[in-house]
Length: 132
Image (cartoon, rainbow, N blue to C red):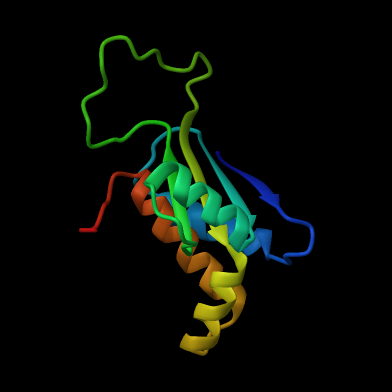
């Protein structure tokens, strides 16, 4: 079972079902046990704070991901697996205002752009990275 935890700032409407279905479809064949991922939809001010704190970039961005462990890195000996055997992938944070701007530029629905950004963040949680 795939569990998707959501947190959204109250004034940002998102299609949670669409996001959950996209994450589930992306994980089919890649994850062979119960997994959990967190998705937060935030404003540009919060995204800028996160980007500055964790990437030392004083600007907003469209999506950030915070993995609990990187599957491309060998797990250190002191790492202890969760006793419930749930693979907790990490957190994906999406800037709603950035998604709106990108959707407008790409002539897409905002929910489609949010799904695109969430899946991009999920790729990072799964260890698929792109050059900076």
